[in-house]
Image 1 (cartoon, helix red, strand yellow):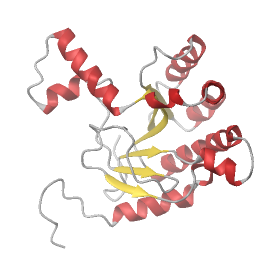
Image 2 (cartoon, one colour; image 1 turned 90 degrees about the vertical axis):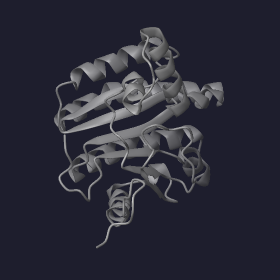
Image 3 (cartoon, rainbow, N blue to C red; image 1 turned 30 degrees about the vertical axis):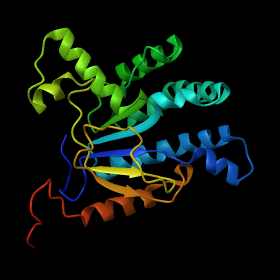
Image 4 (cartoon, rainbow, N blue to C red; image 1 turned 180 degrees about the vertical axis):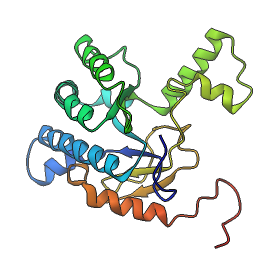
Length: 235
């Protein structure tokens, strides 16, 4: 799938940050922030598909997030399971193919089943790929590549060889990384794929993120001079 215009990034990745602060500002429990964040995911997926983006990767849960309070982790896992179950018909309607990227071994059997079902039901959709990074980290992905190479006897003597051993070798380079809530770091996300990504940070908390905020990020991206290590473009 190709973007409609070179000014539109083919692959957008988003670190969805600020659910807890959104709830705290309203003197509400953090779980309400996570629920509001789910609504923002639906808005964002639809807006990205409308914009002509080919691949959207969302950082839903990192390997480090297990360190959060157990009750909050359980709520997050339940929300993800229900979201997968309830949102699949809309993904199919919008022709969005879902894939979950991350270590599934720590996930509950029920959640793993919901993931497999959602991936199967959306497998033939071709408008946009939605990659949900769940129990994922960039370092985990690199370690998985090393383990795969060792197991299969692959010599990691080129970028192509390492790419082929990644958990999802077909995932293209990220063109635009968006992080909400004002934090300015990549937090162990897509370390290989972010090598030449344009970075865009916004103070907007994730539950408030909408199509207008996406448009602002895309407008900023369109003004960037992407050099990939080379010289500036001349006009």
